[in-house]
Image (cartoon, rainbow, N blue to C red; front, top):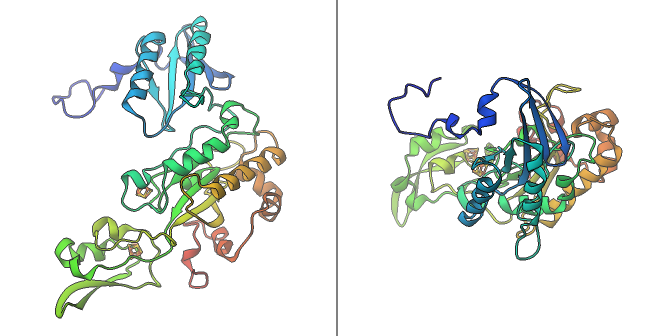
Length: 370
Ligand code: SF4
Ligand code: SF4
């Protein structure tokens, strides 16, 4: 145990302190698990112990009062233990079956003022679990779209599939608000990707005062930035220029130099990708492919993005075989049929995305550019 002999109190406490007793006592002894109903799992140990998990949808950004309420529920039903999943679900665990229904009733009975669930139970099995997502306009500097806004709008549209398990298989949705891709958009059934479509603007007046020019140049993965002397207010200053035809709008330079901003109201928007997965069940893991080249940002409810995703989900639900993931279904029927059935337009922006396994973006060739 690498935590046992540590001599510093820097960093988080030893995770073993947070195990519920039933988990600690049965470590390495679990035999199997089942999904009993949407949002409820049982894990059975070789010792005969059982642990029941009730999963509820959460949000990536939570108020302190909501977190306090979660802790109160954990104190009341679960001996003070609670866990967050990587998809921002909250899991309440109990060690006997008779504790499950009172916990579910308590969770489902808690509502926001408008009447919607505070703690909707679901997100397991052949359905849609919470959308994993990134920082968005609230926290990061390079987003081409928001994170929490589109995620909330899409989850509202597909909420029934969080509560049931009617789909052929798991359907994982992810969002990354730029192509630095802090979310799992490269390997999700449906991925929402924020995309810039314009190169950075250069603020010559301040660049040399605020940025390390060699660092800005080195930050560009396509070598699109080079040094340049420019005239500003009658004075010659050190700055840079961007070779626009080499730029793939990644925003790395802006991370290093705030005088190279590339956020743009018309240029920024959403790309939808489909068909990726991590699982190797039925077929090997797959990268996502671009299916919709651009949808403008439409805050606060992103109607086109939500409606397009709903359409893909419904077509998959109606047409795929049981256990087939979205990408497996599309490959079986053929990608041409995928576009026909979902009603999505196949445009020239998608063409080379289906040939190159490295990066599924049309910005790799000189033929296809906005
Ligand atoms: Fe920031 Fe991009 Fe990550 Fe979004 S995906 S949080 S914009 S680096
Ligand atoms: Fe280079 Fe990316 Fe900046 Fe374009 S946005 S200049 S590709 S670092």
